Image 1 (tube, rainbow, N blue to C red):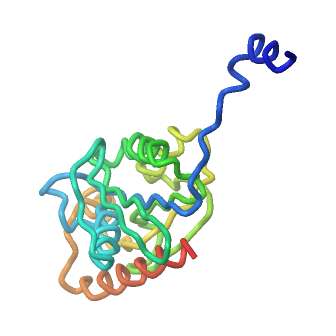
Image 2: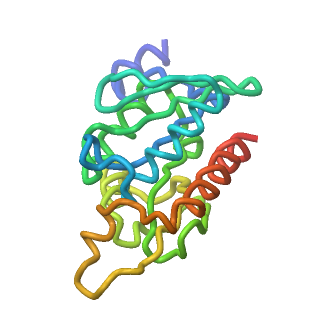
Length: 196
């Protein structure tokens, strides 16, 4: 009788909670969608998540707000996304797939480029500031906090003053390709370690 009265008086506080799946992970590689952005520094997140999916025999399909692939590895499920919202609205896609797949925020790994790190340097953090990265900034706005894991992939900062945008949206130099490939392989290892 008391429970019925409480449900009547406070209906919002007694909604059934949807359990989160702790064996499921969201891997969000950030970048800009479209042929003009392929193989650019800003799209390294796309390249890393693509390498992870290919290594595990998966493939992407176009779905709501992202290209999506599901990969199973060592009893875990990885929902891998490449948002089609463009970088500045990455949070919309990340939040949608996190909610749709019932994935806890601590099981989401966001992969982004980072100008402040030397080429190929990787930095994994459980939380932190957006450091001026528009994709991270939007995710933080949508989630209303910065407590989500992210893997930063160093792209270096070898550009003339005032040419940051051209550098970030530019293609890799031939002299950088080996370091980029090595960094992508190590990033795939990081994704696997993240889930173990």
